[in-house]
Length: 357
Image: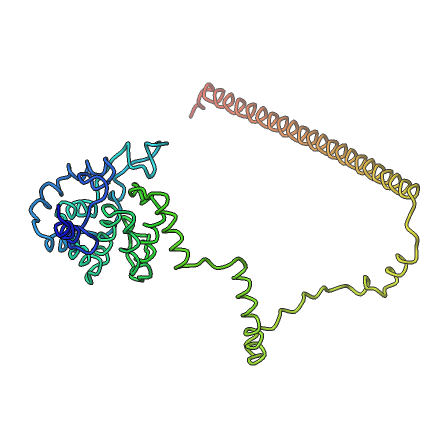
C-alpha cells in the first residue's frame, strides 16, 4: 500500500473522520449477556423498533419513550437472596423487563452511527435523555483512551435528568459523566473495564480539573465568616434574641440561708456512728410499738364486731320465735271458735220446731 493510500485510510477511519471506531466486541456492544439477550428477545425491540430505519426516527422514539437510564424497568428484576456473582451489580442470574432506554441504545448501535450523528445526540436541545443515551453509547463503544476527549467539554454541564427507574435520583450531566469515568457500576450492570494506566490518567485529569478541598477547609471558612457575623450583630443588635433568663428557684423562709434551722445545722457537728445506730434502733422500736398498738386495736374492733353480730342474730331469732308462737296461738283459737260455731248450728238444726196452738 502506497503512502497516499495509507493516509487516505487514516483520514477515513481516524479520530477526526466521520466514521466512528468500535472498541471491544462488535457484536454485543460490550453489554452484559443477560441484558443483551433480553433486548433481542423483547417484543418492543423485535416489533416496534424493527420498523424504525433512520437515525431521526430513533431520536424521536427516544424523545417520547425514554424516562430513565436504568437497564431494567422498575420492580421487574428480583435479586432477593442472590449472592456473589449471581446478584447485585453483576446483572446475571435473574432477568426482568429490559428498559426502553437500553433497547433504543442497542438500536443506535445497529445503525452504526457516524461521528456527526453522535455529536448531534450529545448536543440535542429537546431532551436530556437523548443526550444521556449519546454519552452511554460512547462509554460502551469508544476506545477508553478517547473517553476524555469526548467528555471533556461536558464535565461541568448543569442540565439535570432523573436516571432512576420510577424517579428519585436526579443528577446533572457533568456528575453523570464523572461517574462514567470513575465507576464501573451502573445500577444493575457494569460498564466495560478501562485499562489501569488509562484509568489512572483519567483520575489525575479529574483531580486537576476538580481539586478536592484541603482538610480543614470547612473550619477555615467558618473562621473567616465569624467576623462577618459578629459585625452583623454589632450593627443590628435588635435582631439578636436575648438569652433566656435562668430559672428561679423559690425557697421558703424557714429554709433560707439565714434561717435558725440552717444556722443550727451548720453549727452542730455531724452525728457519730453510735448515735446514728441508737437513733435507728429507737425508730425501729417505736415502729414496733406502733404496729402492736394498731394490731391490738384491730383485734378489739374485730371482737366487738363479732359480739354485736351475735347479739343481733340472737335478738332476731327471739323475735322470730315470738312471732311464730303468737301466730300459732291465734290460729288455734280461731279454729276452736269455728268448730264451736259449727257445733251450735248442728244442734240448732236437730232441735224440733216449736208447736203452735
